Image (cartoon, rainbow, N blue to C red; front, side):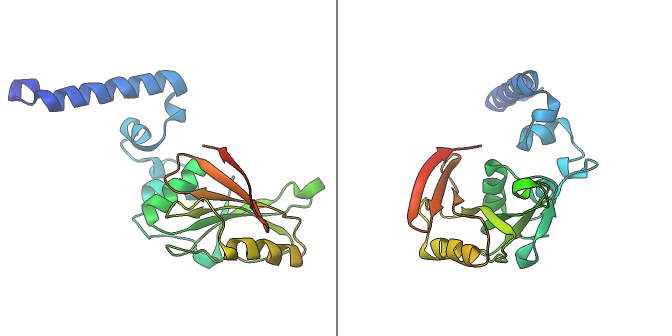
Length: 192
């Protein structure tokens, strides 16, 4: 139909997109699709699916800046991925942090994850002895920990937390994650 109306370039684009979507479905199945691919096979929207988690709702159901957890935090059913955190930061334009509150099991198992949001250059989180800062985002893509990032590790340790390192998710670095200690950067890794 598009070709009949003289829109050859648009017809080619739609054909390429349909082919890519078909390949992705074959590779990961419908349940493994993310982003626009998932929305394409579920026109009702990902956030409308029953049981959609908080991160999914913030990514696909909320408007920019709506429903953010702020300092109050938001309990999560599972730890968000690096890609989800990066996408949250891109969509909402603020830093996000993930805290793990230790559970009663051996080495803190059985705990719970919490998501916090801040502003474009910082996120405030509660410092508790029973918590670990898993990671936080850097919206401007800085791979290095700030002086405040390093000082925060000391505050957690002073509060009795077993945390000795944390991770930075610098936006726009294709899944690069920086692990840092109070002394500085200890390693880089690619995570998705």
